[in-house]
Length: 275
Image 1 (cartoon, rainbow, N blue to C red):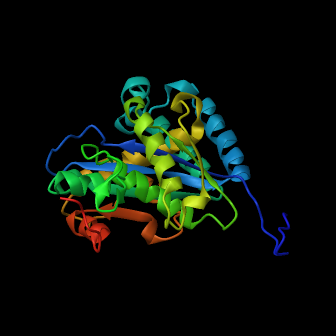
Image 2 (image 1 turned 180 degrees about the vertical axis):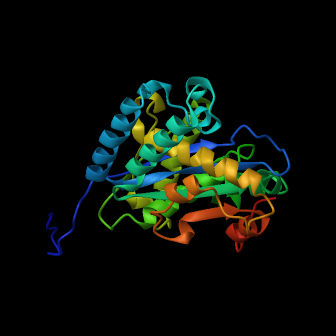
C-alpha cells in the first residue's frame, strides 16, 4: 500500500498485457481481417499460468520453442503426427492453464477491405497520426491496418488499469513493425487529452519461443482470425468450443471489438481530417 500526500491509499500492482497478431500480411484482400488479441492480468496469476503452460507442454513432450499456434491449430509441423486423442489432450491442458487464473482476454479486429475504403489522410488518423492546428504533425501508418486494433487494445486494457497503476505491454510483433509500434506507443503517452495515457507502462517485444504468455496470445489471435474468416457474413453461427473456452473469462462483451466501416466512421466523428 502506498499513502500519497492526499492521504488516500492506492494499491499498486504489477499489471501486464501480452498481445499478438494474425492477418497483418493480408494486404488489401476483400474480406480479410487483421486481429490483435491476448490476455492481461497481474503478476501473480501470470506466474501461475506460466508454470502450468510449461508443464502442459512438457507433459506432452512439446519443447517450448516448438510451439506455434498456427502449427498447433492446423496440426502441422511439430504437431503433424499427433493422434487426435493426443492433440485434444494437449489443447485441453493448454486451455486449462489459460482459464485457471485471473488473466482476461481482449480482442480487436479490423476488416481490411473497409479500412482501405478510406482516404490516405483518414487512414493516417486511424493509425495514430497526430493532428495539430489543422495539420498532421506525425505520419501514422496508413498502409498498415494493424495499428488501428493495436491502439484499440491499448485503450481497452487501460480501462481495467486502476488509477495510479500502469499496465506494461508485451507484443509478439513482426520485427518489421516493432519500431513504428514503439513510436506510436510513445506518441500516445505524450498526447494530451487521452484518458489512459498515464496508465501506460512500457512496451517490450520478447521472443514468443521463450515466452509462454505470448504463446497464449498467439493461440488466441490465430483462433479468432480463423473463426472470423470462416464465419464471415454468418455471425449467427457459434464459434468452435475451444475458442469459446479461450475467451470464457472475458470481463465484458465490449472487450471483443470488430471494426468495420461504420465503427471506423464513428472513430472519426467530430474530427477535422486535413485535406
